[in-house]
Length: 224
Picture 1 (cartoon, one colour):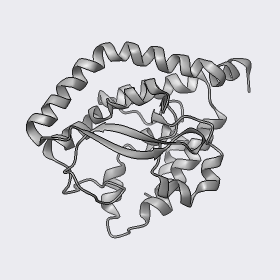
Picture 2 (tube, rainbow, N blue to C red):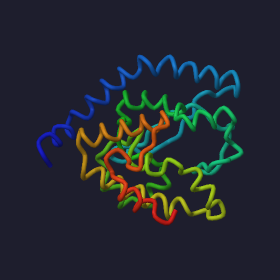
Picture 3 (cartoon, rainbow, N blue to C red):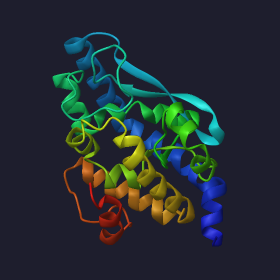
């Protein structure tokens, strides 16, 4: 690993997370509070959704999101058109504004701005060997899988009759991308993913995915 990449992995990445999150908070806090008030006014309490996820070193933490679904238990994976998603929640999910509370997870050190998306314990337990390979990384708010499978809910809706499709097809592909990210970890990779995520939120979608390249994106999505 080049010197700059080692520096990034050992401390630079965490410093960037804190500084960038504080800077983003200047703009994100009023927006997040406005969205939270809207959720409370339209859909009622609770405003926040909390769920146990697996973090760095296998440690469990509670991820935060704005609530976009009706309260109550249900499948671990959400599909497009899920009747539990509220009309307001659908808009928040489409614009990714429901993810804003995760900036608090980043400040706490539970997560990084960029890193493999954290999974729920049952899925990690099933693929414990695969997760050991990326276990030193903090999970992220965004990553290559978030960009490549940005239409994940639509994909799952198309396979609604296959209850194990996510675990059997999508999850292994996400893990391949997570291991590739681990090998390519650098400040250039992270900034590329952040820029691509910002473009996605703003509606500027390219054939690539934050430096991953169209060829690898096509391979990851092949057969979906």
